[in-house]
Image 1 (tube, rainbow over the protein chains, first blue to last red):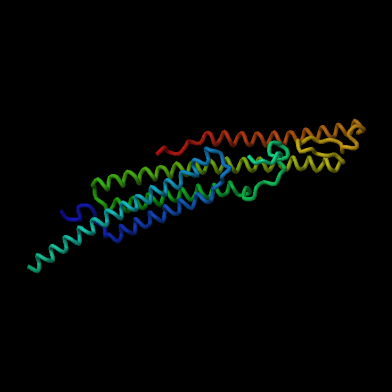
Image 2 (cartoon, each protein chain N blue to C red):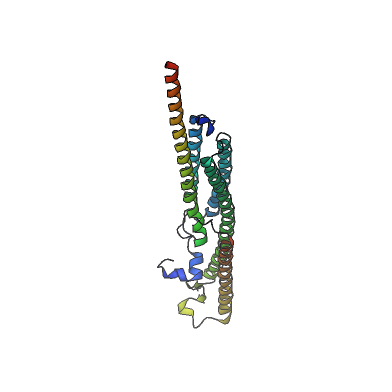
Length: 89
Length: 174
């Protein structure tokens, strides 16, 4: 089974997407600082607290993408190594 | 609330200097709402980019589902923040107006040689309290009514803001 069954994008490009998702997560986290107000009513505080949660979920997605890319890259390297050996032999 | 005992007095609280940072609070919520709208757009762009290069598979499906859900959560956050911005701005504007009315009445009271108590009651200066002529007492009670009107407007503004906050849907449970 070739790695291209899972991905048809350069791993570097996928890592870029993961990095952009992390950047977005940081931006969303920073938006919370604009409205941080300990005296706000509970209904408002719930929404202040929502942003770190969305950020954290996005970071997990970015990590998951990197994990998939890493495992596919390993498989790619393994395939390349085997083909190279076959070529040698 | 604070331990300051004037905090419980509507007039004293209304005319006290608002905490620093309150002035642009509505504006900051608006900026936050706008940033969240842009974040939702950016997430959808990244999602499309990813979907175009990641074929079907369980990891792809999971990620697809999570990104779709998070984009919806960002949309909801954008809507909630915009509504909070509206409520905060309206409340702060209404409170500023009520504060100006109360301060104008207090200034008129001082010009007339009257005193405003922390309770918002306009009275003749203590040494004249018992001997003040009818006209002075009438002026004092008119000014007291103006201050009461200002504190009523402030209370109504707080109530409207609370109602508006209570109407905003809560974030998705996790």
